[in-house]
Image (cartoon, rainbow, N blue to C red; front, top):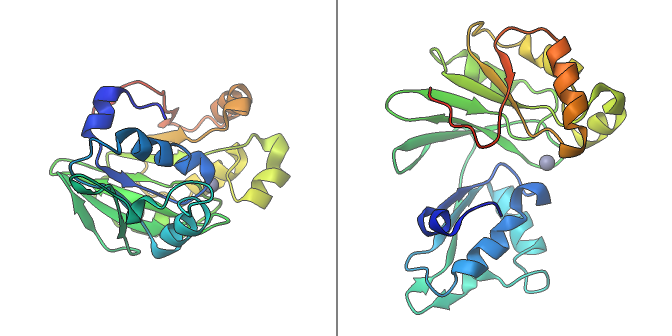
Length: 219
Ligand SMILES: [Zn+2]
């Protein structure tokens, strides 16, 4: 939804962690905007569970057209690409490995690398194990991005919806063995940003930062 016209012209690969609407709501309109001019399909990467949910619940002719069956004058406009747990895929200069995490629908995080560096991103998750096991097995990741959606007061809601609070984040970070690796908090619910910033600050964890939207980070 936030993409500029120039960015829309460049983006042809969309990689999804999961199907929740706050992660997919812009996708149908993104493809719709580009429908006539696409001279190659937009490739939408997801696990088989994620693709199934999108096909049954969004691209189903009721909520929006089934773009995977439609063509413009150049050919297909959208193509689903299935990804598998812990199997690397290569897109442009990036290597991406999906890792299953613990959310209330099927969700993956990613290990993403190029020739120079590697980062890890949890996607939406509650407490999880395999993600940290894999990250700990990597040689010096450049940065790790971890969700923290709700403040501590909403622990019950966080628990029910499989998200982290600052207290849960602290427990998760005890599993991380790369002591000097910067960790950036992502996916804070905008309504609670102020509370979250305060509570995350109070954790006093060195190398823990809040990711600033719009800032360019050099790794
Ligand atoms: Zn979610």
